[in-house]
Image (cartoon, chains in turn brown, yellow):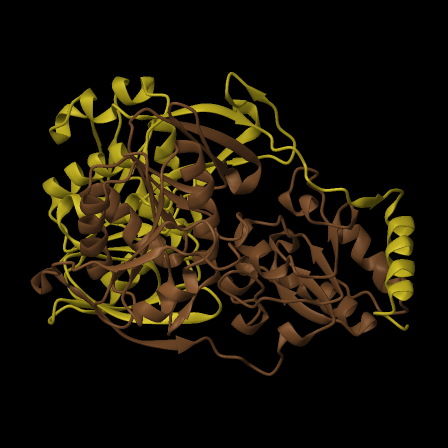
Length: 323
Length: 264
């Protein structure tokens, strides 16, 4: 009853990185509860995926062979049945887009309390989950009063498990009721690439909500021109239609690895950070001293971008546009 | 056809704030319509403009203050609104996902919509789980993180794109009735027009207690307790250039030249 069951994730035949993070998070928690770590691989080439996720720390891997790709109706049924079989104390799932698509349904189906997007787990006669609110400006701790719970784990918060595990791999024969499958995945589509590949750029000038209005975009474009940089952005700029989707840095956009990344008016929400934390040097220009971007920045200017950017353009001999 | 949109009023925190009594002090909070719900309202209103005979109803759990936000949704084209609140809700310190979904499920039961749209998450608590929990409670099909929706009303199918990580979208057919959690960027939310704002004043906004929707305070019981709220310790050790804008821009320019990324 003190075991942990962690659900892995894959897409188009590949294990996703978050699966290896699930092994680490699950091992951490199982060490604290004094139980075993069970992993689940549902759908796809389950044997190959199970071999891949068999890293140090895993005690057992359960495979459910059904369909090629993720389908939440299949996942929900398979995980609920596997949970009943393994009888763990805690169920862990990734707080990924797909995790968000099945974990709440599984928790509801199993009548488990659900805490999402955990960044830390502590167990001492009860589970305490640390999570963020208000775009990362505050952290909260949530105590779970029941013995059992479901928790989703924030991607990239735990290290990826390494080494080779010796977990027993066992097929679990889930009884999937096909009449309950009411959604069908019909394909995948890549977001259009466009003419610029920001993932190849060495120097990115990136903008966020702080630029306030589309009318202020020429100011940033003047800086980009004066410094021969490449322009990228956080999600809201693309959502507003001010820049095309191929400029978006983040979890749902591109992952970038430039030498220098200047984040202008970007708060540093976790979804954005997922795409830019691999930059060699991160420079923040932001008025908010509590913005999460400061946790990552190597250098920074705590000032209004509308004062700093024109001065910077002039430093490089560019022309400051009238806004 | 009826579309129910869940609308939440969320608090935004000012740059500088203080925490008192385990929460962010009220004077540092500003309230607004949850960003993701704004896209959900717009999607519903667009459907009502494309398809004949569609009613758009909003449902909110929130105090009287939230009516400003709700009127904004009505001004953008929703037809009427429901707000659930009473003394028991007022006294509850932490409303968890399960309780919220239970409350919304009671509203869905009364309204019997064909489609429920929610935002993917709320900007304050960011649980990202109420929509799918609601779907499971009411026996609707669902899809999370939808960034494109093509509704086949006759066929009873919602063709959706789900925005996965890394610039990949999943194409999925979902049988209705369904709950769809709407991702930002799916559309361009309109501004409320002056005419819309005037009209919103006369649109119905029903306030209901827990009892009115067939529930009692037991729905608020939770096994989750928020035990602490604090500013995270900064992990950063950024070198912050100080001075006026000319000085700091000069420092940054020198750094960029030094680093060799700018030659000018």
